[in-house]
Length: 377
View 1 (cartoon, helix red, strand yellow):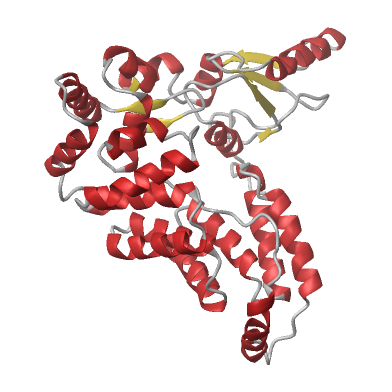
View 2 (cartoon, rainbow, N blue to C red):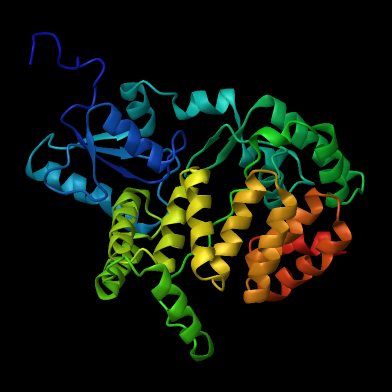
C-alpha cells in the first residue's frame, strides 16, 4: 500500500476494536451504533468474550438481568487480565466516535417521554399515529426514545391543546392534515410491518390441479428443484427474525430458493418484505406483483402491496389491496387497521368505522386498540 494511503487513527478511532454494547442507548439505535463502529474501523459482537476490547454501557441503563451479565463478564475478564476490555459510558463512547452525546441530543431535540410528561392530553399511541400519517416526523429513533425537532413539537402542542378542549382525536388529525396538505405527498411512509410467510403450504385439493397446470405451462423451459428451493426457503425463514445483522443472509437464502424454483411464491413475498424494510419500494412492488400473478390467494402479498401503494399515496389502489387481503383472510387485524387508516386519510370516516371495530375485536390487546376505540365512536 502506498505511504500515507492507510486510514488515519483520527478518521478510524475504533480501528482494531471489537465493541459490545449493553443497556439501552440514548443517542443511537443499536443498528446505527453497529454501523458507526464499522465505519470507524472496528467490529461488533453481541456478547462479551476473550476477544472483546470495548464494552459500552447505554445511558438508559439495563432493561433486563441478562444484559447486565455482559458487564459482569467484562469485569471478570479484566480481573484475569487488567485492562483487557475498556468499559466506557455512552457519553465517553460518543466523544470518542465524534457523535452527539446523550446530553447534547436532549438539548437539541425533544424526546417523546418528555413530551408526554408535558402534554398530558396526548398519549403515546396518539403520537405514533401522527407519525404514521406523516403529520410529524421524528428526527431520530433510538432504543430508548423517539426524538422530534421544534417544528413538530409545536404541532404536538397544538394537538394536545385541541384534545384538552374536548375535540376528538379524529377531528384533531383532520385539522392537522389540512394544515399540512401538500407536504404529505412527498414523504409519507406509514411503516407497516409486512406480513411474512412462516411455513410453506401445499395447494388445497380443489385448486391444486389448476395451479399445477398453470405453473407447469409457465415453467416449461425452467428446471425446478422444489426440494432444494424449499430447503433454502426454510434457511431464509430461520434467519429472517427481525435482526438486521442477519437480513442480508436471509435475502441470499431466499434468492437461492428462487434460483432453484422461480415460482416459489413464499420466497418471493419474504424477499420482497426485506426490500420493503430497506425502502426499496420498486423492487418490493415488482416481487409482490409477480407473486400475485403466480398465485393470487396469498393474502400476505395483497396486504404488503397495499402498504406500498399507501406509501406512494395511491390510496384507492391501497384500499383495493387491503380489501382483497381481507377477503382472503378476514381475521387479519393489521389489514383492518391499515384499511381504516387509509379511509381516514381520504376523508371516508364512515367506511373506516367497521374496520376500527374489527381491529378491536381481533386484537383486544393490540398496540392500537385504544385509538381504534376513539375512532370507532
